[in-house]
Length: 134
Image 1 (cartoon, one colour):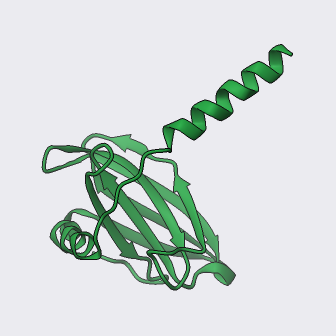
Image 2: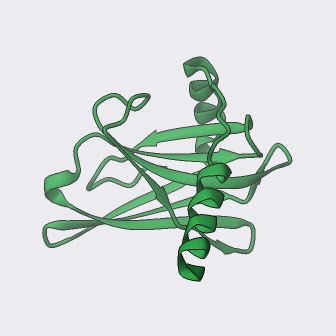
């Protein structure tokens, strides 16, 4: 019973922490992505049939702290077929994410970054495999 109560606590806590939502317009997303593009560094390296992607974000933009990053898969980024939260590491004034992906899954991939709590700043960039962006 004790394990079940602990499990239930974590399930409910996890669900409540992601329950808020915010609408960001496509125009705002494009505006912010264009504005901050020179601060974001995306590298893609091929390793055999796999790719290793690293994205470096500034830890703050316009006074807002980095909040999180997502990998989106699908041909329509605002209705992705797959959405994966990405773990971050912080070094000095940069936040980095990295992931490895099979060449069979590389089409239609995007990385997003968010700043500030709830309705903050959102940026999104397509991942162009075999190219370095920025």
